[in-house]
Length: 118
Length: 112
Image (cartoon, rainbow over all chains, first blue to last red; front, side, top):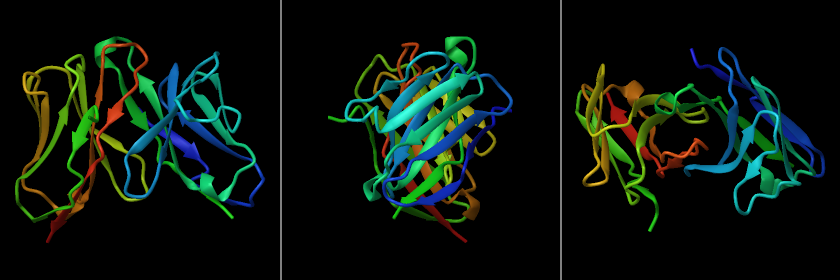
């Protein structure tokens, strides 16, 4: 159980275009999903927290107009990188929080999306 | 001072060795502790989850938490080449946001 999928797994796009990444919880409902960015040989950097039916909460330094997050249902969150530039090239990973009681909550991660902006 | 400190390694051991991975944290309010394994170009995979001091065992893996010292460990017994990966400790507090704070990750290589 607790499977999270991401689509696409990798994408190459031209500078200036927008890219949408989907994150789905396949066998559970996730009221909260998280979006991370990871640079080579670095740890995960939390970008934003996405709650179903409400606006995402962005971490300091993350441009909310550039990284649009939509959490339309309990099993789907999307991250759209708008007007992508080469410096946006990175590994983007989502996670979904599961568990009803606080003690049982943890995060399960998707397989990640590798974005390359040319 | 970082909230979570983890030696990035790399750590190289022979097959069959016992591996010890460690993290320290600064905030005594942290209550939940996790270890994730991440293979290259893949998403992190949850290995262990614990919220109390002491040991928790799952197969070849043992997670240890010492809240008094703010120190957590992951032990891998009889290490295998397939254990070669980056291991990330993750810690969260009691707030309902569910945000995790990750260590830098330790890269482990198990040589056959």
